[in-house]
Amino acid sequence: MSETAHSQVFQLLQSLPLDSGQELVGAEIAYETYGELAADRSNAVLICHALTGDQYVASDHPVTGKPGWWDRMVGPGKPIDTSRHFVICANVIGSCMGSSGPASIADDGQPYAMRFPVITIRDMVRGTMALLDGLGIERLHAVVGGSMGGMQALSLAANWPTRAERVLVIASTARHSAQNIAFHELGRQAIMADPAWADGDYYGGDTKPDNGLAVARMAAHITYLSEEGLTEKFGRRLQDRDEKSFGFEADFQVESYLRYQGSGFTQRFDANSYLYITRAMDYFDLAEEHGGRLADAFANTSARFCLISFDTDWLYPTAESRHIVHALNAAGAKVSFVELSASAGHDSFLLEHDQLDRVVQGFIE
Amino acid sequence: MRSAAILRPDLAVIAAQIEPGTRLLDIGCGDGALMAELEASKGVDARGMELDPAKVERCVSRGLSVVQGDADRDLTNYPDQAFDYAVMSLTLQTSQRPDILLEEMLRVGRTVYVSFPNFAHWGTRTALMFGGRMPVTRALPVSWYETENIHHVTIADFKALAQKKGARVTRAWFFANERPITPIGANWRAQFAVFELNS
Image 1 (cartoon, rainbow over the protein chains, first blue to last red):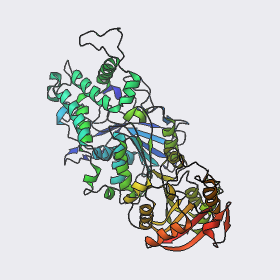
Image 2 (image 1 turned 120 degrees about the horizontal axis):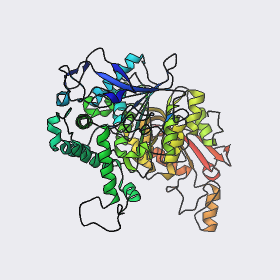
Image 3 (image 1 turned 90 degrees about the horizontal axis):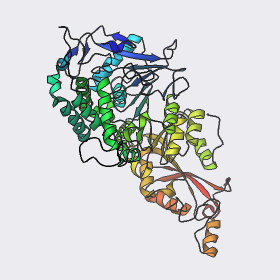
Image 4 (image 1 turned 120 degrees about the vertical axis):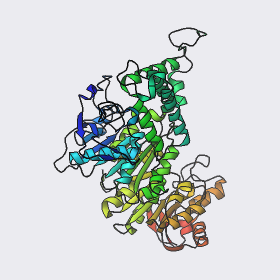
């Protein structure tokens, strides 16, 4: 795991109990921090990353060399201001950037591969809470997350209600819909249909299921964009040619773009991690964990909540955020909600958006 | 941020009635002026609902708990008597169904404050009687085709509606030219009214 060189790694001393009934022994959590923890430990902000995100929220990615995935939001003087707050971002368990996942080495000296236990969003948060315990942070100033990061923020608020004062959930949902699960299943099947997947035992071999993983990423990437955004960016424009080829090369710019996204992704992400994390998201249903009524998930909360959705996000549409807002209202929780206008669909939370910046900054304070 | 703002007269009279440390829902809270004032001066746990996303953004940016929503649709999700006060200032007349909205307010709040422009003010009456056209006045400055006020209401109409809904009018305040006036002949003389109701 040479790519973890930049991150600190927290070693869990106790085994991590999992929702499946199994436990993870000797788990590791890789994390980054920014800013200084105040003497009274009151200024910690936990940022939870999305499906294919990582702990490099505001530092260059060790593999791609690109700036952190939320570099525009997190830093000195930025909406999440690291000159005032101590920002923590941890790689989720099941992932592949230094935290324990299917590529990690099991007791027998071999990679876990598909022997890695199936995990849930709550398991990811359980791992992160162990890290916070290790860092001596009892109460977070805020927990912040977009997409799957928002699911973790909600899970933290529901299951550890005293541990965060503010909960900021962007472009997220309290449950995966049939359509969400369907797109993830498409991605998983693409990976598992790749002969190089080899039932997950491809570590150390000459090939890995890059073709399958690239197709999975291409399909998922479409769900992160909007029709409006795709039309704006590509339309029906052709790629490096004046006429259609009457063949199956990437004639259209949008095809070329997707292929590039797919192949680039295989450089930095493990196919088995993609299977495990999409599974965790599909299993996510916060109401189900709390007797079927979402309001009951927040019965004990004293936190302030803020939910933000985007009008062109069809992956986790505004209705999903409203559903959470209604439950929080029913539970008597302090909640703010705003639907922002943006053309880029689900991915809008990662992009330039002045209103988003103002709401985030105002809410985090 | 939280300097004591000068509140609109109807908001000032409502703010003066609110007991410290209570829970309040401001429906159509706009930029959150009433909420901010009550949180700062009386430690009120104030929540807001606002249709306009730009106004919601301003509220959230100043640390207020405001939900973007449509009072005609989204009030049903609040539990019965969830608030000590439900407030709606200059918003009733923009609602699709003011009667249902008033019912909902009486359900979620123990005490309800409603303020609205009085369509029976003498200026409006004379403009309509002699001009023969929908009045454009200081209190109702927007032409009929672009006004948000789709359900004009008079003080007498509102009293009748409150009675029909089984609500008790416990207090009322009337304003002309931004100054309080006596209740005598209010349906002629008042440009704005504030009502306190209890179910």
